[in-house]
Image (tube, rainbow, N blue to C red):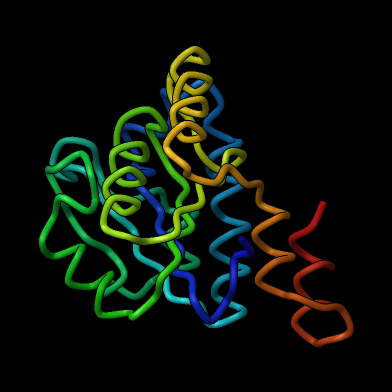
Length: 182
């Protein structure tokens, strides 16, 4: 199954000021998510960004907020799963997309529960492994095994971007590959 730009929504989970720095590899998550957000913005794809209890964990990292300044893209939640939050689901369902491309933290908690719940609701779910993370490597590895067992697709940033693009020779391809592909 391929990721299609006209069918997918980018979901960024809880990459917040007090949570992101304690991940095993915070730069991987922040840099990877920045690349995904920039590609989605350039291609006009919808993006939703969750914030788990921002009063305690702070807002989304400034690196990401600069790419997505629209406050309507942000959803505050206390449920670990984004799909367990009525405001998030109303926005998500309102987009009319069948695919969820998910990145964020922590991979074995909020990303996991969001992915499992969206899959259970009938959506095609893709977790971007090089833009997601946890505090401990064991949690990340175990989450990947569980995603696979649940039929959730594990993908990389480049897989997502090239599937969104579909072909070369377009202005979008030239711009994105020049600035976002390493």
